[in-house]
Image: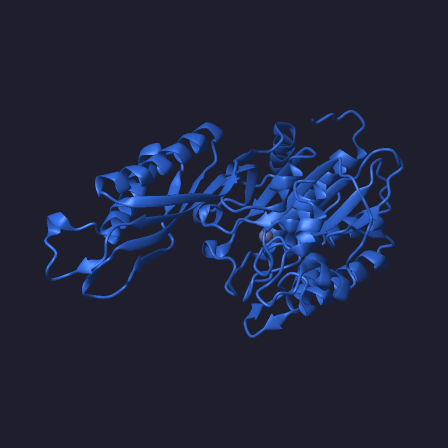
Length: 411
Ligand SMILES: [Zn+2]
């Protein structure tokens, strides 16, 4: 008989974690705050109950390791994060971590011996809501960010990551490796729910480019300055906003471009705006199109400035390239989803996840389950119990294959 996730136990665990940091309707477990510590303590208590060895690394990532018979091979790792944004729901992050816990509980209960170790991971500060950058724990774990730099990050009150790690007792020094990584996560978008599909087989994470830009013209009297003599920075930024939309449509393949902030100066009703600060966010999952889009957007910003006779400044603040997961791992997720006779679609993640950094060091894939109405990062975030259990069952089968298989070389 095939092992099955205990749906009641998984759901109960999720709901219990969802009470930690509860503040009105939402959950507030901002990275390294008191509620985050409480969530960590609850999680490590559960790991201890299963007899797992608990490891904490320098950035406070927590790993519960269930040993396999082969001690030379790195563990199959499953996980996600326990920190949340402010006024969050209960599923984002916690589902991935607690499904890993549920898998280990099941392996223990059924006395399953695995060849390779299974590690359940809870990464520090995935959300980036209190300390930047986001996905801090997985970036440090994979060597893409120095621990010292991450430690120095401070919140709005000037409190640093290192201070908080020390204060809550999660500044560790363990070092762990991962042979494979799998992450179950709620989609946080509307695709699966709107299409009535049960599982998302995630083959990659889309790239994201951010710019801060500023147009500078000339502030002048709104009554006395004829149109042809104006150097109106807000007019240019408005044109840019419209043309960004056209550009994304023309590039196609799911490209999206957004001007999320726009501040005219001096911001007075009877003055032609002499300055305009704006931000641009561009996303695309195909590597070549992402690069093309980046160039096109930067050119467009310059071009609009020229047409309006303005000076401009432009700083690119983020260039997170698209990530494609290991094809063997994506196939594995797809085949296990099929085995379970679940409906699925292969898709890309629109949001960033720890898995995108883990994919730099080991074969990685993700499993998505539907978010009702696509809502997330809010108290209304919901995923059906049946969908959580489906996703955890896909994860379970993948873990079993990777940890017990002898001939799988998915690199
Ligand atoms: Zn998340």
